[in-house]
Amino acid sequence: MKKTILLYLLTSLLAVKTNAQSTDWTKDDRNNIYNDCMGYIGKYQNLTTEQKESMSICYLDEITKKYTKKDYQNKIDIEIKKIRETTLTLCSKNLGLELSETKKEEPKKEEPKKETTSSNPTKEMLTGHWKDENSEFWLFETGDYKMQYADGKTAKGTWKIDGDQLNLYKDKLFGTSEKVFKILIFTNEKFVYQSIKSKKDTFTATRIK
Image (tube, rainbow, N blue to C red; front, side, top):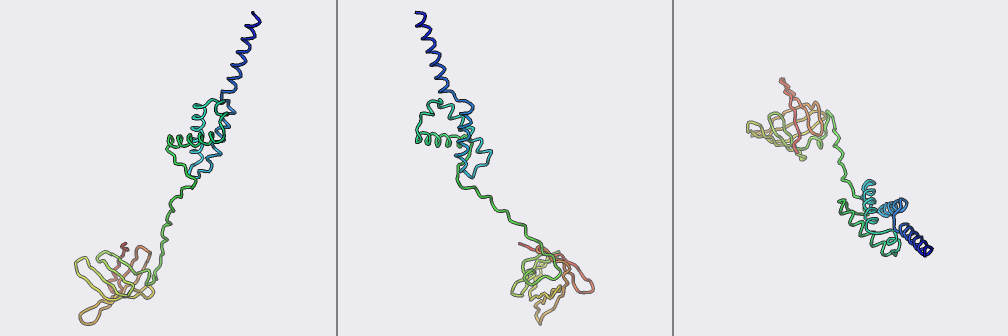
């Protein structure tokens, strides 16, 4: 009788030990699941390394929480595939991540427009809408100009550039009158010009966009 009881106890202990060994997730098992997940989600190029690590940890926790080692190992390939897809979908929602095999393109940064500094601008450089201390004017590509003064007066005519000299030919009732300016500094956004007269008034015109 004693031998029978002893044999039963030994058999029970062996069964418990064997069952524990087949259902408990070991450290190596957990590492394998984590690494398998990292390898699988490597195709998702829109995720950063840190995001992939978070996804893999979530995947590991969900798998080991939902399945015993024995149950998981008994799954066939198609079952493992479905479990993987379902678990990754769950983890991506929990972490607020989108899984995409295409890397998200970052918007291209526009390079700042280089300033062109010159005292001899071309006609193309000067063409545009400008405003200085006492007037607003338009230099058209056709060679015409229009001017609106701060006091309400207007003027129109033609213009030309010759080196650093800007000539304005104002239309008048009888013929035209000429104003001549010397361009001291020119950039894409503004230019400084001086009247070629005894007063030699200097103005700074800023480009209006």
